[in-house]
Length: 427
Ligand code: NAP
Ligand code: HSE
Image 1 (cartoon, rainbow, N blue to C red):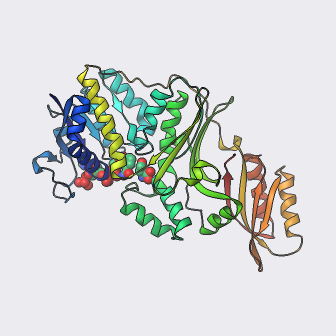
Image 2: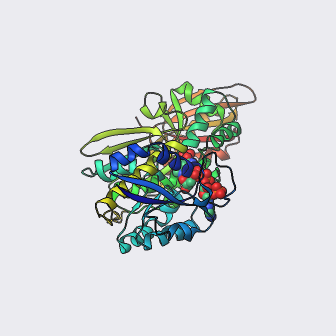
Image 3: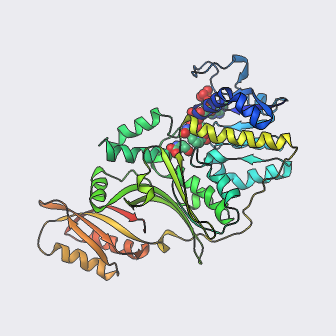
């Protein structure tokens, strides 16, 4: 039986998972593939660190060239993360004609085009299933299974860490910091967890999905992004009382005017399937013109779910090598569609205000909304006292009008604070 050599760049959470899966399922994989997969060399920073797996010490190196240029390495697997020097290593591997597998959304959402160009010039392929939604094979679904469709929209929970935090805050009354610590202990969070909390990781992932779905390159800096750091337990409680869960959603839609790609916390009706996606689970809702609505669900982060996606890519790369097929996955961004600003978005909104608890205050607030043609669907006073919590839900309105009304509210002497403004997902 033929054998293909694997070079791992990184042996952290994901790298260790890949090593484990390749060891544990080696016979099954060999039988399915018709070839063996052997880890030949592994790049790490610290070869003496205890990794909890029995790796022969001579496989570890701190020299990237010992992996990338190793004659027995056919497939380079980048699971070290970060943009530099990772980009250089991936480019070097591709330029040598090696097949490359990566889980790195930071890299792809910034430099995807350059990397695909290098791969095309060298007649090889770059696989990246694990870069979005962990164990859910959403890249393959968009590129292959739904290739006959014009994709109309994607709505997803695609960051495991923030979904885990929001779930623990809601179900176990945990405070934000403790929930984050738990997510880190499980290996879900990025090296710098602000990437998760501030929505950047989800923005990188939706940039990748939107580029594939709409055949038009969307890069990470172009995605409108809000994270979850302003979500307080009070918002979760008030949202629940209104019949909603709060989720960090990533959305990409094609309209006649252009693309809308954004990430922000969102009130999701408890009746919507996305509301019941809990903990580290992700779900991606895709609407295509032929297939209609579809939803894909699975663990979005963590050692083994991510290793499942990476190892699936390794097997796909090896299968191509076995049949002598290289350079078959071309970049599919053959159009250039405009991206719309967030002000063009239309949605209904949840607002939590801190306002004086006196007669006439509500009328003043309603009048401010009215001046900007924002119509209110519900108003509830949640607390009493000198300053009270008011929760308002608007009808569907253009974002620019809502922002103008919010600016006016902030100037009203009766409003102590606009404590939070959160978009509501249309049902
Ligand atoms: P990690 O636990 O921090 O592991 C990174 C590994 O890369 C470590 O083994 C580290 O070596 C090595 N490394 C990093 N920089 C290096 C350098 N400059 N030179 C040599 N070795 C270097 O990270 P991870 O959680 O496995 O994530 C890896 C990638 O997968 C990232 O792109 C991440 O975004 C992506 N991803 C992660 C998950 C997840 O659930 N964790 C899910 C999907 C995608 P040492 O061990 O010696 O420090
Ligand atoms: N930090 C990421 C998450 C890892 O929590 O979703 C998976 O990409």
